[in-house]
Length: 365
Image (cartoon, rainbow, N blue to C red; front, top):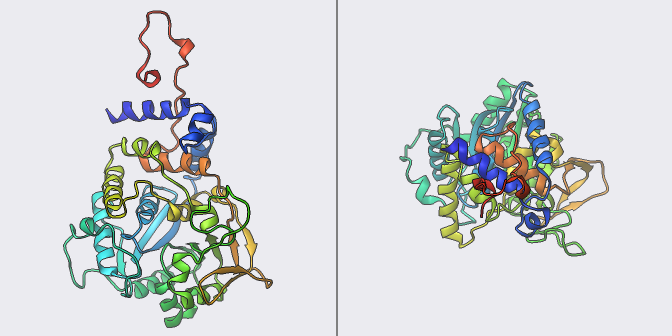
């Protein structure tokens, strides 16, 4: 049933006129564009997978769950481990462990970061508490990061999706090890566009973005570290998974999409917001396909209020100031549904139905 349903749903998606897609917040490109995106992703599978570690504050906002889902569903990535950061890091580890077990990845290591005072609501607490508490089950995140970097010097991309507390702790404990990272790809900061600014209005309205502003000294240390940084700020990550795309994704009925559906529902109840903004997913997507968020070298200065200002010195980060939402979602949905590389079928046109013939389900209303 799933094999029949997904092509029909995607066919209906591709058949929408561009104006109808845009009015619903849907990608307005043609099916051929979507196919080229998934084919480009598929063409990279032959390359050796990139070694990554994800540092996450999963459980507050919902975007971390989508970022994790994208990482574990992508053969282009080898996930060496997940480290939890900020707030109740043990509860976050329980959430990650349940997520990995539910989606068939119990072998991926989980490590617990340093506890801090929470600064946001833990919206997916019910799901996290479904995994048994096990004191001492998970290793220390900073030690885990250090050991993995020393094992694979110059090979690891650290994807930072949280306040940078664990990273700062590693820099303090073993700065030489930290410098052996291949790069840090982070969701964080704001250059021209702040929260809620999707680029439709003139002028600039940057924000003190949460991941940076929550631990300003840690962010300042990172941007002074000399490690290559690829930064996905609010300017390029306010990507809305809207009411048309959510049923398409959840219709796949896989363990991964079912888990995302469960967590999204729990987040929606807690926040009274049905539409996730997938900030963190772009950081993972960039590692898989850099064309999704082209970067430019910039000098970034973190000020005392947590704003990421553009300085005049030598570049210390590669920053993505704009992304194509249409291209991103045509990449993301097939990856999460397990259909990446498969063609998105074009729906039959109305003129292709012979008189007296019953329209196909994809073309009917």
